[in-house]
Structure formats: structure tokens, C-alpha cells
Length: 518
Image 1: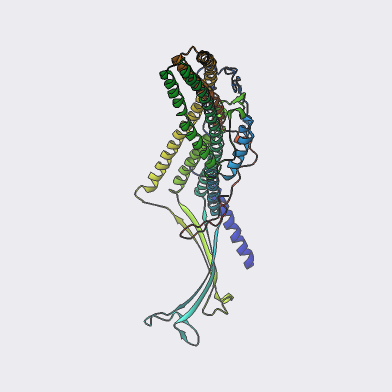
Image 2: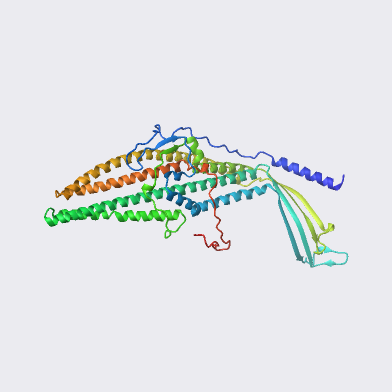
């Protein structure tokens, strides 16, 4: 049999053996998806089909639609161009979202790096040396002409090594890393959802603060008119100084409520700027008022069975459980024998010019089987720790599922009570307005009853602000429902866009992209 055929058969046999060894079923448990919660609703009682309603703006009844899907851009249901523009800009520039996407890239590269261990490791090197041996030893190199000491030695070789994945150690490791990458992917979706819902709620809060400021300014104007009337009546003798002083105090008290509202408004503006990836001095371009926000009337309500597939935090917890399951297989495989084969070949000579020659060639082929016989129980306890970590992840997953269902139940109850609160606040506002108008007419006609006027003013201001707050609460809790149900990420065709920020890799990181904040 010719030499090349014998070599081919030996290589083929080695490849077949490697394939057979590597085709073993990985040790450790195969991951099974946790069972969905065995419940069909979020509240003990059946959810009513709709909320109550009133004649106030955003006072329409909201209808709960079982099984209705969530649009990918759910915030557009508020019909606000300013909100749409701000969210779109924030999705491009928010640093926290971009950071999570970079972390996802790190996780993916870790998976790719581990997958490389499925293939042999091939390395080449060239080693030029100059050596001198001790005189008491025989010379290392002898030629027909002379002994050479010191001498030059040149070595060029290729090294190949491969570890057989007999017990699935590498496959389980890749499985664990892939689960961690999936965890990070859902964390990106969670960051996406948190960002969009935070902007929506912050915009609604800004609109509510503007509404409270407008109502307070309107009442301040009315109080100033009343003060002017009382001062004129004081001049004509129809009012006394104590009544004027009481009205002055009432006006000052109402004016004192403005600075805290303005402060809160400024804080919300700074928050919106930060969420959009801008500095507070740049501020958001958009302004928000309650009149520019429409209340979504048809609200989706998915079943708990769907919730565990739609909530990013639940999916992330599930992938952490998956990773912990794979780590049990990794710890088990580490307790079993390890099979490795290695080979190297090349050329060695004392002269570089004649290095590549058949007479200077060498090769080596070897195998290794390693089994830990005693390590003080290290590998055993590592496997037990992996099993305990799986139990920890399982309980954490269950807690996340329960927390998600609780979140949805809380929002559903809030929406029902928000509608009732707005209806009551609207009735309170109507009654307070009648009382205030009657008290004001008495003062204007000279039948001054300042105590009645002051009480009516304070009550009316409280009623107006309650209506504004109740309107904002309905809008905010509607946004919270979309967030609690997962935000519709599964309907998005394209994932969030990542921006690459180039930095140096020296001892101190240096920003290369000078337009990072633009």
C-alpha cells in the first residue's frame, strides 16, 4: 500500500473516531421551559368590561379588550406629535439604552468565542535562538567537520491541538453563554420599554403640572379682582380692613403654591432632557399639555399565559434559569475524563537559508486522557453549587412571574379607580364652582361675606387641581398598563439601533468621537 494512501486512511480513521466521540449526548439536565401560570385572570373578581365615565376631558369610558395585541409603538395611541418626536429622538440618543445594546454585543461575542472551541486550535511559530552549552557536556551539535558551540538554531513549526467534547462540556458552556446573551437581549427590550414608558409618564406629569399652574394662575387672577372689589368697598365703607386683610392673605397663600409647581415642572423638563440624551441646558424641544394628549379608549388585556412570554423581565429571568441549568452540565462534565489530541511538525536547522528541507523536518503526534482522582471535593461541591444556583434562579423566576401579574393587577385596579376619581373630582369641581360664583356675586353686590368667599376660593382651587391630577392619573396609568403588559416589543420588525462609541484602549480611556454629545 502506498504511503499517501496509508496516511489518508489514518487521517480518516482519526476523523471518524473524533466524530463518534464528539457525538455523545451532553451530560446534565436538558432545559425545559417552566410551565405557564395556571390562572386565567389577574384579579379575584371578573374584570368589568369598561370603566366609568364623566363629562370632563379625558373622561370617556375605557374598554378592556381581552386578548387584544399591543402595537409596537403604543405611545402613538395618545395622539401627540410632540410625544412621538421626543420618544423617537430618545431611542436614538439615550445613553442607558445604548449601553445595554453594547452589553448585548459583548454577550454575543462571548458566545462566538466559546463556539470557536468546537474546532482545532492551530498555531504556528518561528523560533530563532543562539545557544552555548556548558563545556562539561557533549556538544549539542556535531558535524562532519567540527563541533559547533555556540551555535544558531532556527525552528519553524505548526502546532495542532483538539479537545474532544465527549461529555458536552463545551456544548453546555455555549448553551449557558447563549442563554446569558438572550438574557441581555431581553434586558435591552426592558430598557427600551422602560425608556418609552418613562418618557410618556414624564410628559404626562409635565402636562399635569402645567395644568395645575394654569389653574392656579386663573384663580390668582380671580382673587386679585376680588381684592380690588374689597378695597373699593373699604373706601366707600361697605367693607372693613379685616376683610381686606383676609383676602390679601388668601391671595398670598394661593400665590405661594406656584413656586413648588414651577420647581416640579423644571425638574420634569430636566428629566425629559436627560432621557433624550441631552444636557439640562439644552432641554427638550417639545412642551406638553393635557389638552394635547388623548386617552386611549380600547385597552388590551392579555392572559397570564401570554404575559410570561411578553414581559421582558420574565423572559430574562427564564434565560437566567436556562443558563443555570446548563451550568449543571458544565460542572458534571468537569468531573469526567478529558480527551485531548495534539500534533506538531516543522523544520529545524542551524542555518536559516537551508531550513526548509526534508532532512530538517520533524513531527510529533500524541494524545492525552486526564481524570481528576482527588481534589478535596472541589468538583463535587462545584456541581452542588451549580444545582443550588439553579434552584435560586427557579425561585427568582417564579417571583418575577408573580411580580409581573401583580403589576398588571395593580394597574387594572388603578384604571378603574382613576375613572371613578375623575368622575368624583368633576362633580366636586362643578359644585365648588357654583359655591365660588355665588360667594363672589355677594361680594361684588356689597353683601360681603369674606369668610364664605375665602372658603369657596380654597375649595374651588382644590377641586380644579383634583380634576387636573385625576386626568393625568388616567393617562399615566394607561401608559403603565402598556408597560406592564410588555410594551409590544414582539411586533417590532427591527431591533433598536446601536451606536458604536470608539474609545482608546490605553491605560486611560480617551474619547475619540468628539461628537458624542451631539
